[in-house]
Length: 201
Image (cartoon, one colour):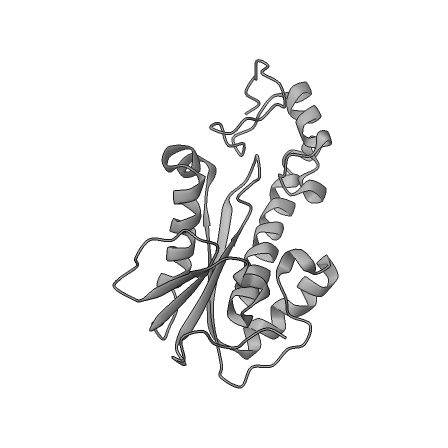
């Protein structure tokens, strides 16, 4: 059973990101403040849930949360500031949209930067320990998946609808065959072996 609160402050928000290891598309983060009486026995780290359960949980989280937000940080910025900084920026952007303003932040993982003097704590595997981080992980994952499904229509040969931009064999084979798109992260190792990449606009 996941815990509802880490700090004891009722305005504690949980935050998490999705898409950090992808070759294409944004890194997406969400932040959630749950009501103190929030209960859900299905909610867990989004990676432990099926797509069907994530899609079922999203409207429940959004309806029952005190507040929530999500934010994308796109490829060009990832390439400029690196994926770690982009992940933190996405989390901070999502936190910045919350109303009321959180009084404490719990972050999945072990890296974060102070945000507006709000105290925070990083928690390794926090999405499997605290409901608000788990809720943020579900929102980040589903909103990012929605985006990848949308851009799949533009470049169906990469099958982002299925792989969501992750480095599958199929995705890398498509990069080798067709080159890269404006959605690919140019600072990432896009091919398993060093090969010349051509740009597909």
